[in-house]
Length: 498
Image (tube, rainbow, N blue to C red):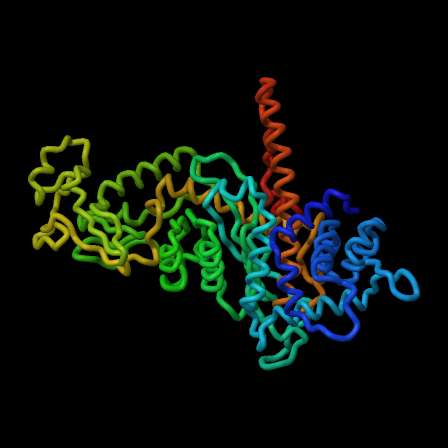
């Protein structure tokens, strides 16, 4: 059951978001006044989800009518009619919810949220981030996950379904024994706060969410979400994303994010790794330009395997460090149009090359170009070359890929995976099929937003309790508590089962 603390915290979130009054102005007036205000409806949705109940309107009604009598009177769950006190009915809850959905959905629903709905969801989720943590970090990790609709998908192409905004999507099973499969529903995306590189830990709170039908490609949709976040005054620094985002066309992901000041830290798709043409003779590879004499084995270095040994990790880091010596270094920063100038690594003292006579005076510890090109290209003749933003707009990022610095920075992305795991935890609110019985983008998004408000509240309280315990143990000279790692991997358990 919820306590008085939950009610007070959820009310504070709604008051800070200041969306209830704006929604009330959109609802029709006239006739008998509605008993249930929008603010009380949203509060009931959060209370129901906070009590680990599914996203059913019947559960919302139960959460409201079980409040203490003083709160029921204050929130208009009980009102005085001519015949005496009247307790809120389920029909009134359903009516107010349908009016809110009708006011926030698109005039012609297409599986994407309307501008009004985006404003409401952004404000509610942002309000669930406590003020003391809002400026703790600028880094976010983004990802998408599947969320099934309560309706059954059409059995044939062009068939009918109860949820016209949902569609067929594809989800991958990364766990042992799981297979890829299709599902009918929506793509749920989230941007989770992550600590800065080398910075103190922060609570992994969802800063923005998005729910769209599977017929819409997730990365371009979430670009507009991040653009709205920056426009609202929330600065974006590192954006951590997997290859599902990085593999999109540059104008659909990488370019607009750089335009708002984001620094990309992402995994490259296998189709985008390695040499991809030349620019003024320099080799384009993994988002950088390299000397034409770069050894091919270095250009072929891929990301480190998850199960790599200490010796393999050491060798991999040595290879990426050697590759960095052949990279054309930046001479100027990008101008307003995205152009910049880079210089030969020999002129920057990173390697020895006969075409750059001054570089031959470097120590023999530097790598040496033994077979320079017979007809040197522009990158070998000129002091610097101009690099247009479209040369490697898709693959350029903050750290050299796949260097040690990139690996450590990218490791923070697992925070967004934990965001979805907490949302799909059967012990709390398992957003599997049947969790939400309403249909349509607006209706589903309202419940999902309330779910992430509850989830953020739970995460920040647990984080601050853990931090306080760590400080207490540090003062007392006791070792910090650490999470126990599994001694036996799940793959071994699956393979040993009959």
